[in-house]
Amino acid sequence: MAIIVQRPKLKWWEQLYLPSLFIGMKVTLGHFIATLTRKSKVTMQYPEEKWDANLPDHYRGAPALVTDEHGRERCVACQLCEFICPPRAITIKPEEIPSDDKWAKVEKRPRAFEIDMIRCIYCGLCEEVCPEQAIYLRKDYAITGTSRAEMVHDKERLYEIGGVRTGLVNKWNELK
Amino acid sequence: MDWHLIIAAAIKIVVFVFFVTLPLVAMSVWAERRVSAAIQDRVGPNRVGPFGLLQAVADGIKFLLKEDFTPAHVRKFYFWLAPALTMVPALLTCAVLPFGSRLFGEKMVIADLDVGPLYVFAIASLTVYGIVLAGWASNSKYPFLGGVRSTSQMISYEICMGLSIVPLVMIYGDLNLGRIVHEQAQNGWALLPLWGEGLSPKGFLLALPIFVSFVIFTTSMFAETNRLPFDLPECETELVAGYHTEYSSMKFALFFLGEYAAMIIGSGLCVTLFLGGWSLPFGWLAPATIDAEVPFWHGLIHLGAFFAKVIVFILFFIVVRWTLPRFRYDQLMRLGWVFFFEIALANVVLTAILLWVLK
Image 1: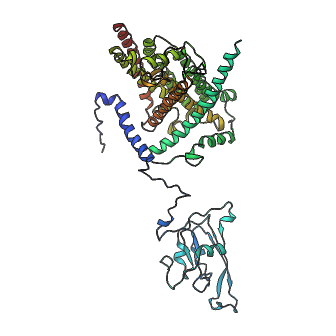
Image 2: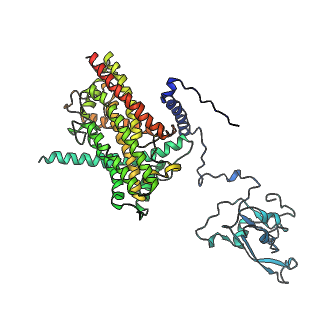
Image 3: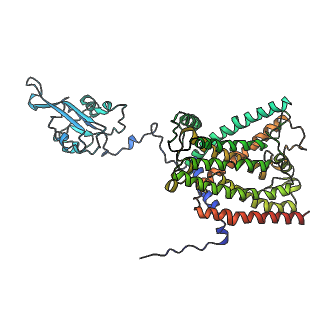
C-alpha cells in the first residue's frame, strides 16, 4: 500500500534556509564544545588506554595450552581439537610417552602443537571439544607479528600464554 | 629600476605566500579534521606532534613519496597542467589583499592595485580552467562529468559573487582594497557601522544592502571553493571523486591544497570587504590617514587582527561544512540563477536608490 508522506508546509522564513543553518550550527557547535570540554568522551586512546580490566569472563581470545598442578601438560594429543577446528588452524604431532617417564601411564603427549593465529577464528570449539580440559581461550587479543611464521604459536608459546590450571573439572570456569 | 621596491615586494611575497598562506592551508586541513571530529564526538588526528599539529607535515611527506601515477589513457600535457592551474590562481589572488596596515613604513599589501576586487575575480575565475582541464584530460567518464558539473557551478556563482560586491563598491566609490579597509577602520566596518560616520541613520540603512551582499558573497564563496553544502563536483555515489578521480600523489594534493588556499583567500577577501580587514573595531589604533605612519606595534596588531578574523572565518567555513547537508544539483542551479542572481541585481538597484535618497 502506498503511503503518501505529507511534506510540511514551510513558512516563508523557513524557506529562506538561513534559520535552519543556525539551528544546525547550534547542534554541531554544542557537540564541538562538549567534546572540547571533555563532557562527551567516547573515543578510547587505544594503545595507551585499554579495556582489558573490563573484558567479560566468557571472552574468547587466543587459544592456549595449560599444565596441571603437577606441572604435567594436560594435552594427551587426542587430536580432537585438530579435527574439529573449522579453519584448520591447529596442527598436532603426537608422540608416545616413554615408559620410564613419570607420567608413562598417560601414554601420549604432543611432540609439536601449533596454532596458526592467522587462521584461528576464535570460535572456541577446541576448548569445548577437549576431553582433558587442556586448551582454553584466554583473554589475549592483540596477537601480532611481522611475518607469517611469527604468527604460528608453537607449543612453548602456547604454554607460556596458558599457564597453570588446577582442579579436576573446571572447564567452564575461568582459572579456578 | 627602483630596487628598494622590488626587494620589498619580493620579501612580502615570500613571507605572505610561503610562510603564512601555505602553512595556513596546512593548518586549516588539520583544523578541518579536528573540528569535524569534535563535532562528531570523535578525537581526530592527535598522534603526530602536539595535538596532532604536525599531521599536515606527515600528510605532505606521504603525498610526495607516493607513486605519481599517470594513467595511459589521459592527455598528458593537460593532465599535468590542470593541478597547477587550480593551485596557482588561488595563490595569485593573495597579491591584492591588504593583510596589515604598515610595517617599517611599507604597506602590508603585495600589489596596491586600484582594481583590487576586479583582479581577484579575474584571477579566481581561472581556477575553472584547472577543473575543466582535469575533467577533460582524464579521458574518463566520471572525471568528465564531475568537471562539467563543477565548471557550471563555478561559472554560475561567479556572476552572483561579482554582482554581490557591486553595492559595496558603489558605497565606497573605490576599488582599492587598501582604501576600502582604511575607510572601514575610520567609519565602521561594512557589516558593523557602529562608530565614526557609520553611526548614523545613513550608515544603518546602507548596512541592509551590505548584509544582503555579505550573505550572497559568502554563499557564493562556498560554491566557488566547491565546499559543502555545494560540493557537487565530488560525489562518491555518482561521480567517484569527480574531476580528480584519476589523480594521485602530489597532483591530487595540489587540487586539495588549491581548494583550501581558495578558501583562505576567499575568507581574506570577505574579511577585507565586509569585516574591516586588518582594522580593529571602534576605530582603535586606526591610522588617521591612509598615508600616515603607523607605529611598529600597531602594525603588528593590525596583522594579528587580520589573521584572527581570517581564522575565525575559516572556522565558520568548517563548521558550516559539517552542519549542512548538500544541495541537489537542480537546487544548486536554482539557488544561483533564480534567487541569488536576481537578489544581487535588486540589491544593486536598492543601493543606488538609497545612495541617491541619502545623498
